[in-house]
Length: 132
Image (cartoon, rainbow, N blue to C red; front, side):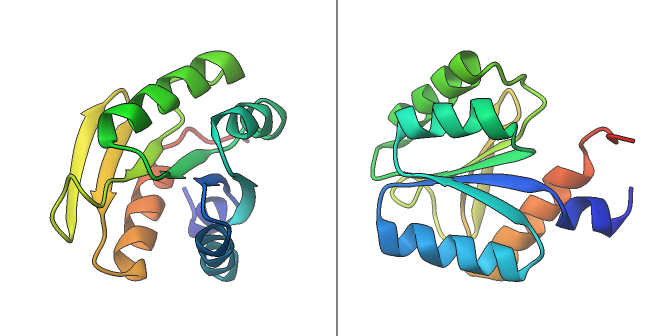
């Protein structure tokens, strides 16, 4: 799979703080990704249903267990399969630089910097089946 496929991927960013959502959107757009955004679970379900993202990035002010429930409900209500990776920022649950597989193609992370996050997203998107 080429890097072009990864860079054209659509990432749904779910972030409840507008400034942070905008910052993540800008950084990922500059990195070549297409971005769709949502500010809460309900909006995320709507966006996921319409946009069919290749990856979901969740950064909400909730504990890790609550965010895992959001991810599960979103996949169910938006009709997304488990092949769509979900990446969750868990600032309070993990040490800096940590990444943990939470099962069902869900990953919790606390990157030290944007390069670490970008590398994780690229790695997960390379695992997706080709659309062509």
